[in-house]
Length: 195
Image (tube, rainbow, N blue to C red; front, side, top):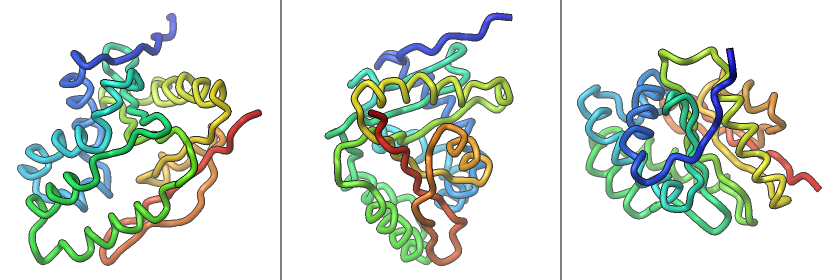
């Protein structure tokens, strides 16, 4: 059987890409700590995805594989998330008693984020029905070639030990741990620029 090819998910594919990421992150410990209530998750996660990485669609750095069975949203050097809007959405979506921990967690994310030019893997997810087929690795290989052509480092935050292991196999190194209050740990990771 031939391997599915990785392609660019265009702006017209944003809804399908976000739907894939919504199913992929439904059991993610960090995401569901942030959006614990199922209704809040389904209401706010698609909007949050757009605020975190929507620029990937406009920039041509949203990748998909196997008819959106897997999706990776990369932000190019100089492109960033809409942090102000993310904060406003968090204030709306998170119950007041949980906000201190969530905002402390978000502050740590910002502190670890590199200041030098880099490629940022904002989100990568595979539809649970298509997991275990190598889609995550294929998406990484595709995008890391782009990073290497630019001779720039790549950065991401791994939200589980399983994901951390996948990224380590592709040259990423853990540079710390993000954790606040009752949150599960998240692992900021860098892959050095290739000459």
